[in-house]
Length: 157
Image 1 (cartoon, rainbow, N blue to C red):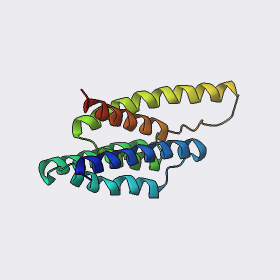
Image 2 (image 1 turned 120 degrees about the vertical axis):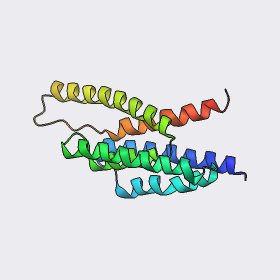
Image 3 (image 1 turned 90 degrees about the vertical axis):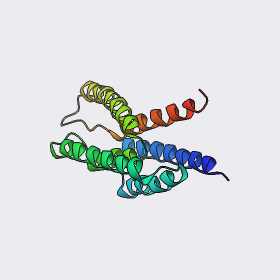
Image 4 (image 1 turned 45 degrees about the vertical axis):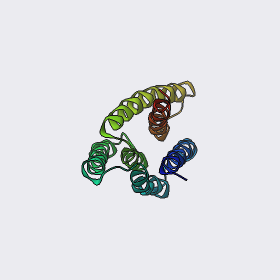
């Protein structure tokens, strides 16, 4: 098996993990540390298979991931995101170039805004009390999957 095929297998595993994260988040409103650790832990294997140089490529991806974590940790602190969401977004940033991470964040934010509107509307229609819970892992998974699909389609362009 060539590294190219191995890289594609890793990306397929990532896609599966994102779907699993979204489904679990819808059901339980949590994303486990084990799943987040798996996403983050597979990133170095991806870097190796994709022949990313440690400097500057891997260094930049780690720095961008840390920035994503810090930014979303603030959102967690003010009650806008769950801890699992923060860790999943940061773990995903380890897989994407800085430009792809920026695209991921934009797509994720738009999807998250739409998801929030739907959840709030359903909450009001059902006349439920309290603050509605938004499974933001769905938006994170959607953003990640869009970036993976774009990567796949770019191979044939």
